[in-house]
Every structure is written in structure tokens, then in C-alpha cells.
Length: 188
Image (cartoon, rainbow, N blue to C red; front, side):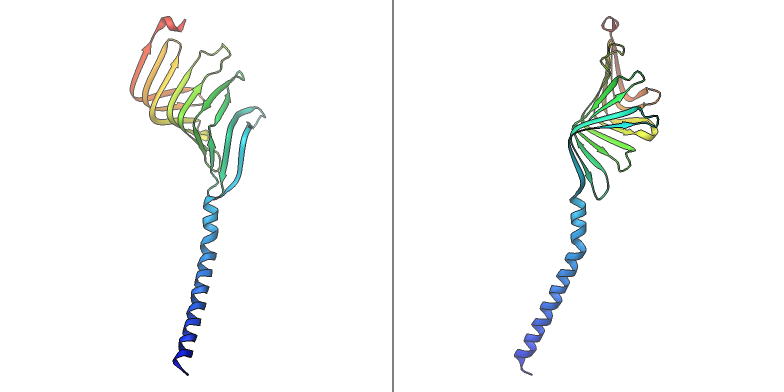
């Protein structure tokens, strides 16, 4: 056998092995790359109304877009607006720049210009809530943040760092650096 034949067989074997190796690695990595960047579904300009066990509205969500991540089943929402009915059926409004929802919907994270506003029916004193971030744990009826918070209603303004609210009992706590300003004439 000549040196040319040995070299040709060697090059042929090297080409076959490198081709097989590249094909095998491509088959192993391609699906995970697709899964990480893909979505199950995308909604645009939508409204979702969720009902409680008695068939009454428990929450309405409106937003320009929402995408569900296929890999971890979380959802990302752009400019979410949540309408939360009170006992009288009037809606509290909760909005933010972005929202994130856990796979089973037990956790909601709102980020950027988080704003909460009371119903405008005249029965509830106009109440506002402002912060940069808010986490809502639905199963625990808990809303919380470690960011600065401003709460206002006629005659009362409160600011603080850190906030916890029991959504069922409607009790809240500002955790630190609390400042309260009370103006009795403005409450009338």
C-alpha cells in the first residue's frame, strides 16, 4: 500500500468521524436552544376574566401583550392592568410597566411604576398606592415589596420602605422609614 492510499483512508476516516460527531452534537443541543427561547402562546390586546368558585369575577386582566415561556411555563405581561372587584362589585385598579406570573398563577410580580387606585364610585375615599415593585402571593392573600411606597387618601399621606398587605383583611404595614402627614381639612 502506498503512502497516498494510507493518507486517503486516514482523511476519509477523519471526515466520517468529524461529520458523525457534528451531527450527534447538533441533535443534542438544538432542541434545548429552541425550547429556551420559544413561547407556548402570545396574546395581544386581550382581556381575561377569572371567576371564583361561586362563579363571581375574582379578577380581570387587560394588557397589550402576554407571552408564555414554553420552558418554564411562566408568563410575561407588558403594561398589565388588573381590575379587582371589592365586596360591592366596584373595581380597584392595579397597573405596572411589566408583570410576571408563575406557572400555576400563585405568584405575580409587578415591576416599574406600580400603581393601585381605589374605585371611583364615590363610596370609597380616593386611595392611591405607588411603588416600583410589588409581589402578590395569591394563595396567601399577601402583597409585599421591599421598595419605597407612597399611600395617599384625602387628608392622609404615608411613605415608607417596605410594605406588607393582607388582601383578605385589607390590613397593611409599612415596614421602615415611615412618614405620615395628616391634614384634617383635606379629608372633608
